[in-house]
Image: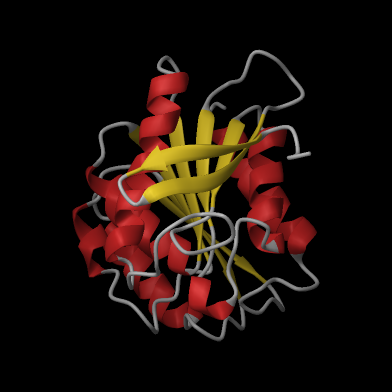
Length: 213
């Protein structure tokens, strides 16, 4: 039997496998889309960082939607180097907007998921705020965020292997000139926050509380 809370979202290439989880406290104080790391590196919606991020958002009172990008798990399609994955992000946002039309949408992504998520969320008026975990600033260009006006939380490991913390600080300083941005550096953590998952979760929940959620 397929677990309760799991669903399929119809898309042009077939379907996206997804999981919806409601917060303990009802009614929900918003909804969130949570995106996983690079599929070719084994990233799925079951990744431990993605799971903890979703749990933090649940604890903050939000309903969460996790999706598997195209070609991952039971999602149809093939990996598309971020191009098609942006369409998958939009499909997740469409699902939330259609099923929870009166709720603010928070967009949260880890690693590759942060890159494609931020690019979509920047221009999508339905997204109120964004969270980037382990933003891989050494691998991808994030300069597009310099036009952002939405609140962003960056949570980053001190020793992240794919995003130099100093380089991220420089990006945050530029974005902060026109948007409310916060950077939380987790001491001792690498890209996957192996021994610091509780600190990661606390950083996300605390920021959401500050946001009034």
